[in-house]
Length: 244
Length: 319
Image (cartoon, rainbow over all chains, first blue to last red):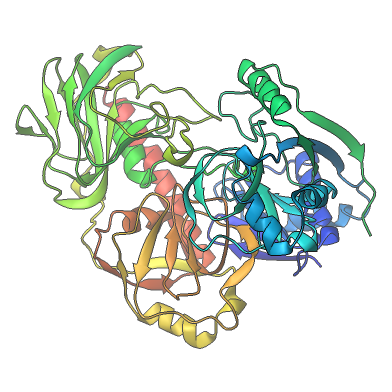
């Protein structure tokens, strides 16, 4: 699917599908690569999402009709373009009690042991469909059906940065201290977002992500390294074939 | 760089803003930036700056500032009864102010957001290409937050001799925030999430701006808008002016500090030139929406860009 529509007086939205589907989302990221490789004058930025790409442009530099034509030309290149390079990011998470306020409740809800929960949460290679909600926040796909847990009825006023939680079919990491209703089962010392650093955002749309269980001693070691600026996040690049 | 103001009283919500962060929404970073970018630009031009310099965005109840060094200032946007040592400082005009004087804001007369520009521009660390404050994530501005008592504001050094005070915007060019004219929108992108009947209702009814409105968005209240099927969509990009309709049917117009993506059906998007008119409406105002074509919206946008260019040229010739 490829359909293009106007979005306000400075936006264009291209839709690649109607469902949350990895193949659809890979097409969104293919289109990102094309926009990067064949810059179109007048485009100021773009926001990829689950099924779509929204492009923000300056009508003083390019008309809607001309932009539509150029985007259609890019679309013709999609079938020949190489699949985007996917990076694998490993996120260390401490699932021990002091970092996992809701772990016992989640275990009880599913009638599983804490070890089983950790096993189910660290096993999948999650896929980053898109970024949004908060600076550096990845929308992850791939949570085990066995871990699907409803949100807290009363959201907390403050959830600490780095907290790892589950909300319905989603799992995610809080990039900042924020209010929230996710069930917290662990915490990472790694920063997803750091305004002070040059490379501010750790994760990008289209990446894959794996959680790695660490003990609290390792947690504090990594936390120190992050503080001192000598922590190297574990990222490997791999050319990914189309998942089919 | 020089110390230019000391904050005696911070006001309700005063923050450093420019035209916002461009290029980081793909990572989930909101753009932030001036709520009324037109007033922000004009204030800068009147103070002898480039339009993208940082200004002080002042919401409704303004601050009290002590002038630490002679400079030229200009205020654009809302009339919040600014005074210098008790004498009025009218909006849309530049003034010379002197060390030791007190710049105060008083009773709001019209509008919600005023922009105080200072010659040379306010100094702040650039984060991702912008000085704009995004308080939710402690980004930009002064330590990523709104002003507090005791803060010292800095400005870039500038040759004051080259800056003329007394420059002003012609009265016919001054926006009228009290006028009752509908806020213009372009329908969509989720046109199929609403029936024709709901769209008719959206254009006919009026909506009240509630007190839950802020830099993230204007929360409106009126006859609930129903969805053809459901309120939720697959999370997708939202733009400045995008009007979301959550399950309760009460629309929310997304503004400068909006998240980059949202999960509610989007009935329409406010056109660029009408966003300032919307944000300057006071809490409790009733607004109506009018559908316009892309051609109309872009013609007005380009006209406004030309106007700002002409203003800049005209002001430069009057050094």
